[in-house]
Length: 316
Image (cartoon, rainbow, N blue to C red; front, side, top):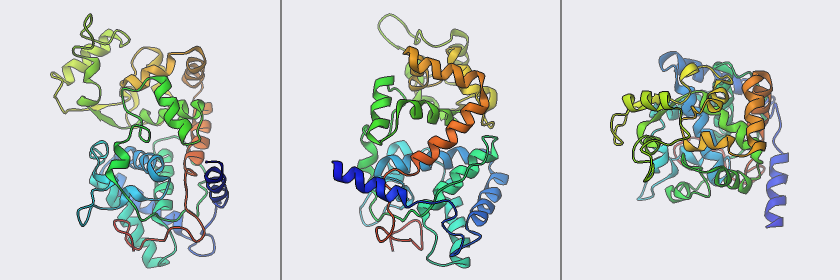
């Protein structure tokens, strides 16, 4: 275990800002152009791109394995149940960026780095601020839906604070970074089945989760009239397309959409961080950028490990 940790730390240390400055100088610009083209057509596409990067890094490390398509009887990460709500248009953004990069500098820029860049561009586009992304990741060749199915990899919407914290700890991230990274829920949507357990038959004594603001619960019941409804609901209603601190303000008002959102105030230490972010947007945005850079180094392949895929949907 110690040797594996040292190897991962060594790989992460090889990532650097400006990695493609000599080999593909327009790499980041070309990725940004692909993102800009997509967001003009689909204004909320960035939320899916940000989620893709997170789900990629938390399974086999940040190796682009979430981009691989199922083939030859192998069901991949992309087709795991929890990833099926990621819009196909998000995968196409990466495809379009890759096509531009292959035309400009073939065989140079990895799909894993494209994901890291486009996640950053998403945060910046919605107002979260621009941050530098260390690059140099190489692409993995393995993608398995069964890896995604493990709750030790991808946190679930009904996790308690302890469960949530343990998943991040297994990836080398702190509880503070987990609370910070949860702020990504300030943009994007959720489907009713992800939270209707809080609205109907919550337990033997209450139909509605008592930690949920009653007015908000009524609003959600109107949007999701049955537990099986599949309506899309903004995760942070006041600013669905604004990367700001209203997510944390909502939690303090018992308006966290998921159990895993509201659980962030279940201990004094965690609640103190939520309160800090709720009153200081600049602190949240700065810490979010740092947490994204840390997350982007999980389990990376560098040097002679992995490959540079010519097609992000399939190993070479």
